[in-house]
Amino acid sequence: MSNVAGAKASREEEIAFLALEQVLGVDISLADAGAGDKKPDGSWIYPGSQQRTGIVEVTSPPAAELMGRWARAKKKGRPQFESGSVPLRWNELTEVCAEMLAEDWARENIEKLVAQSADERHLFLFARSHKDGGHYFYRLSDSYDDGITEHVDDLVLPMGISDVWFRGRAQRDLGQPHGLAELRLARFQAGVGWHRYVVWIEELHLPSVNRRIADDDVPADQRFPKDRSVKPAGG
Image (cartoon, rainbow, N blue to C red):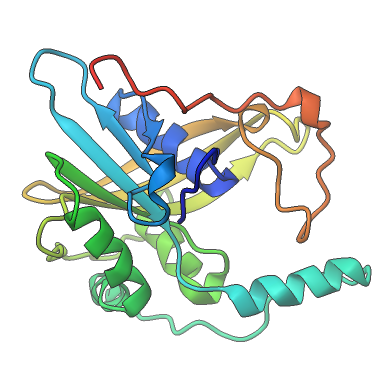
């Protein structure tokens, strides 16, 4: 995603930042907002004396056509839906991920990360639709509570990338639509392997939804996203 002068984290970026902060125990700042689209989205320094640094780029497969269709549907008061089928590709999730990371949109974001100096470079992927990756991301992050396990081989990450994250299913308590949401994540870490996590995201700590796509029933003055304009101590 793109950072411009005076920019704040987008909703998707903020979800990623909050999730990473819970898992990694760090404090993420927006990268240099004056550098246009040349800098990754977020950066941090791990606590302690080692001054180990990390950067992250938050991105998704292109979905401009779908977003445009949903925006038109909202404007006309029609339901928003996604049609079509998704190839199952059971036990082929590693191949799906490798193919996705080789696509132009992913390579552009990987190159942006690799161009920057950091001890760790993280790529955080989300999908706006089931067809464009969401179905597979859900399966990658599933806890398999039903006992049906799917084999997932190790990924070969692009040179210079330490971690790739996949945002999975989010579930919110229907009785508290403005409260906490449970978010599942999958992470492949170079030299270590796969991890799965469950984190909790507070709706009132997020920026507003895209109003072209959906109405926001939370008043703007009740949202308090984190101020990320100041770098962590030591930065």
